[in-house]
Length: 162
Image 1 (cartoon, helix red, strand yellow):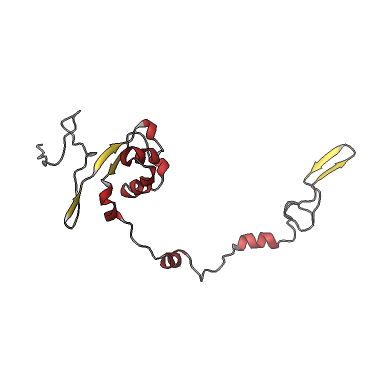
Image 2: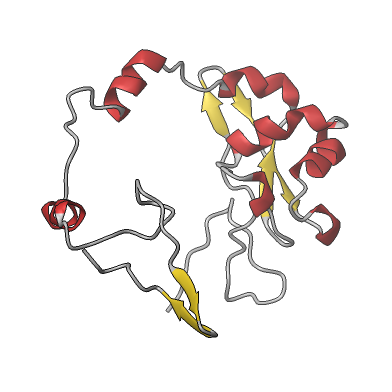
């Protein structure tokens, strides 16, 4: 089979039958301006240290959140050796502002104010059963479940007594 390689795709230098998909092959176009992305391969000393990568790329740790947003990283500790992160010039940072979120509408989607407390009928029968006692830490009336009588130690006596 013959593959027609597009001019913007790069062949893997170690094997010409593969395309290197880690290289940037797109440019973000936001109207009149184009943003170029650059790859950064995470080194061993940068594992789980996104702040360190931010310091290397932007000379400040303060751009860690921007790198997380740009690369869709939800947990900064999930950055491992060999991962490829993309970054761009900070002059383009304003074009990546997160969408404004209405907190009230988000809360209403997550919280059901009309939610009724659900009761497990089997659990309720268990709690209502007068023949069942809970361990002493949960009973209203405390009792000692360990008894010593004439050198004999009895543990748990009385737990299931009426």
